[in-house]
Length: 210
DNA sequence: CACCAGGAATGTA
DNA sequence: TACATTCATGGT
Image (cartoon, rainbow, N blue to C red):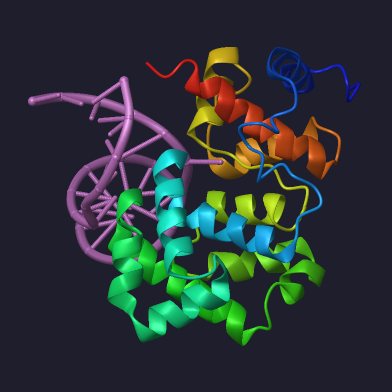
């Protein structure tokens, strides 16, 4: 089945043609390579943006920067020394009490496990399992972190993807795992393509929300 | 006023 | 396994 001659790959080409490289709107996420600080910002952003628009995330990130440096280490220190201050800083993103708790737990994990290095080297299946065991990280967030912070070629499925699948009638089944396998089956194994494609799906989805 | 935004945890059956 | 509920601010 010609890998480059199927509906899913054509959808990627169509969106790419329409919007170009999603560097402008998704400048942090699709940037390559990333510094350690940028990777941590992706992880922090991945938690904060759950069920929230990115504008509100930026408000919270600004609050965090105002207090301290934007890193997992400083979030850990803030969460230990002044948890209330961390919670208040996260107010703009909504669900802020949960997210403050989640972020602190995640920051604690990375502190204990000497930062990002372990997850970077492990096979992605193991890293994914590790991430999923952390409170506040579900399938989409885990895969977003693996794809955008660690450059693992794992396709991220979200509501925009499901809407597009329905609209284009690519599949009747819409479960996370099924769609992820479907996209990965019909796309070249290329994390850069995955990063751009998912971003393009979200950018495109925003144009049709209504 | 209602509705939604780059989800996940928890509980129920 | 599959659904329902809860968490909650800011923009339109």
